[in-house]
Length: 238
Image (cartoon, rainbow, N blue to C red; front, side, top):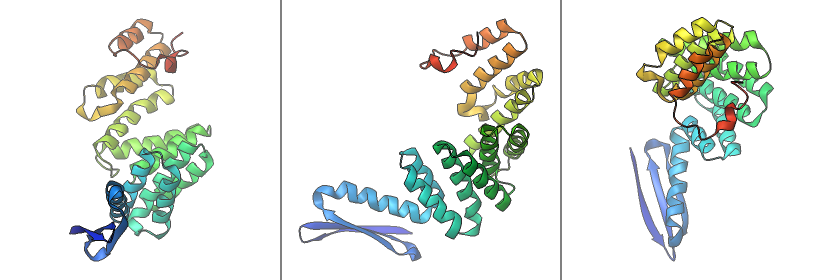
């Protein structure tokens, strides 16, 4: 279990959290900084108990160097069963920084360690695509989609939704726009589609344009709400 205490030491306070047999974390400072000390202790506990998720948290708060450091430490010194996840996160962070070759290397490390890790295949596929390696990209994305849509792949509901999204986009990458349209129509009503729905609709519209179905594309776009960033698509439907 986890317990803790706040103790006054002279004109300062010390915040301590004990994590079962893993030991204790203590941060000390002025009482005015109590909220900051609590945050520091919470993050230290998070890092010690769930390092992969802690790296994702750091990423979400823009602390990319710290996120990478935590992921690298987990990949090299963490429990074996966590290392594939760590490499997948390293691949993701390299994608965000633009070091695509490093992202490919890390993605391969992830799937070599755990061929069932859908996230590893997904990041590898994205990285291969950015290098122009279309065949390798498609193969990796298909592998990711197969894992995630079969209930495997070891991800959350959101991860499974991404799997469905990728399963739909792969035919379009291969030029089979009819199959892509069929899959998008099938997936859009599924609750597991989650937060990929809007992006899926835009890609479905692209598939319709490729099939010279301009009216169909307009109908798909018409079902979407107002776009707050219209410049994203300014060159796609001319």
